[in-house]
Each structure stands twice: as C-alpha cells, then as structure tokens.
Image (tube, rainbow, N blue to C red; front, side, top):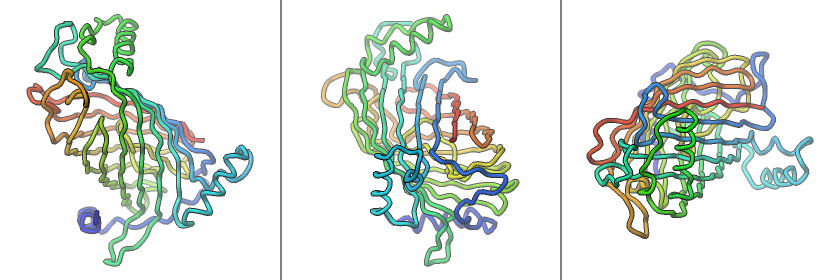
Amino acid sequence: MNTRPLLLLLVGLAGPTLRPMVAATPTPEYTRLKFGSISLYTENDKYFAGTDQHYTNGFKLSFLSTPIANFTDDPVPRPVQQLARTLRRLLPDDQQYKLGLSLGQNIYTPEDTTTATPQPDDRPYAGWLYAGIAFQVYQPARFFATGARAVSQLDVVELTVGVVGPSALGEQVQNEIHRLIDSQLARGWGNQIHDEPGLNLVYERKYRFTTARSRSGWGADFIPHIGASLGNVFTYANVGGEVRAGFRLPTDFGTNLIRPSGDSSAVVRPRFSTFFFASADARAVARDITLDGNTWRDSASIDKKHFVSDLTAGLAVGTTHWQFTYAQAVRTREFEGQKKNSVFGSVSISYYY
C-alpha cells in the first residue's frame, strides 16, 4: 500500500507547528525503562453507562518489552540474552524492535438477558477468549523526499489465537460477576454460538506528529493509524487517529481500547504526565463471528453492518512507573435492527519497569 498520499494529507492537516523529534534521551525529568510494561484493561457498559447489552464486558492483560537490544546484559537470563544478540545481528540498527504478549476475553449479549428464549432479531450471545503475540518495529524521525516529515512510525504485526463459544467461558464469567454484585443472571447463554477455534492476523501502522514542547512541558500529539485484520473471527480494514494534549506527554503511540495492535510503550518515562485525549477508529467489516455466527456450522446470527466506528475521549495520569487511563467510548450500531449506539467505559492501569 502506498501511504505517501495519506501521509501528505495528514501532515497538511496537522499544521506547521508540528516538527520531528529525535530519539528520546533521559533527562532529570525522565527515566529509561529496562524491561517493559504490564497493562491491565477492563471495559464494561456499566461504567457510567448503566447498560448490560451488546459488547458488555472486555478484559485484557498484556506485556510489552522494551527494545530487544536491551536484553543482552545481566540480569537477563542467558537464553534470552543469546536470542536478543542473534536478533540484533539480523535486524537493522536504525530501528527498535519489541515483543508483546496478551491474554483477553470479550463478552457479547443481546439487549434482553432475562429470557432463555432465542432472540433472532438481536445479536447472539458470544464469548471470545484469546492469546496474542505481537512484533513491533519502531522507526525514529525521518525525512521524505517530498520534504514532509514524520516524527516517528510504529508498525505492529500481531497474531491472536483463541476460541469462541462455550469454551470461551463467557457465561461463567458474566454470571459469576452478576452473583458478586447481586445482579440478575443472564439466562440465554444456552443460545450462544458454538465452539470454534479462532485465528487472526492483524497489521497496523501508526505515525506520531508532535509539537515542540510536548515532552518537556505543555504540548500536543496527533497519532493517525491505518491497518487490517484477517481471520475467521474478525476481518476488517480500519483507519483512524488520536489527538492528545497535556503536560509531558509520554513518547508512546497513544491510548487504545481493547483491540489487537493497541499496546505501545516508551523507552523513557516522565516523572509525571497528564493529558486529555480524543480518538476515532472506523472499520469496514467483512466478518465478525460474534454477529455472523459460526463459520462451518449453523448457529445464531444476525445481519451485521459493514461500517462501524468507535469514538473515544478520556483522561490519563502517569508517573515514572505507573499510568492510569479512563475513557468513555461510543460504538456505532453494529447490526441491522440495533436500536441505538453502544456506550461503554474503559479503564486501564499500566506498570512500567
């Protein structure tokens, strides 16, 4: 895909105040990370929305390393050191490479969860339990032949494997939480889509444009992205971006909802940072197993909409080793007959070390 026309358009929109940043260098206000980050995400439509329907709950635990080159010295175990040295010899020196691992679950239900009767005019019950492995390539600031300048670029390839259906444990997780909060149990899980193994390959590219003082004081970032997913669970093409503004913005690639390729972290962290952000992601959807139903056998299903968008806004507060993020999201209607957009909250806590 030739991304130069898109890049030139984004640069034009971003304006002349945006300039390239060199690779982050520790200062008294910043600390260099040695190993990476661990992030915990939770999303639920009860967070400041008070509903219990459609995409009703999501959970994700992820680990993202610092650049592989950091793992060639003690106290890293020797087998890891050997692997890192081998990779360093094979990969270009002007790029940074990171590895990520994740484990997560998404739960989907119809609007009425009080009945055990099948509801063919609403979305099926479905759970998606998965594990992922990601490979990230970071390119620092570089110039294009046209004179357009990209502050930095991140390419992410992620493979997710898992299962949908009863083995995804959607019924057990949802109803156990309902028991804990003394809420009515969902009675229709007997109608969920059947067990099916899932495999998805995701690619996404992000650029980051930044104002002059965004790392040392007050400033702003613009982070556009474009990508695609291919598999029997989700197949789509997506495009979007994030704008964030605040104090000492971290040198990562923005905040994200629970989705493949969403994780990013910086090589260095500020002592303190805080910022507001707003983002959008638009998807052209060819397949969504949670709406289309099983691939090779009959199951509950409903006609999906082929164009879906997420609109998100929130606040993040961080220190050298921690970051707390809250976002409120609106997802446009995903299937024919859906009465209104979905609204849910997203909370994430990251530890950097």
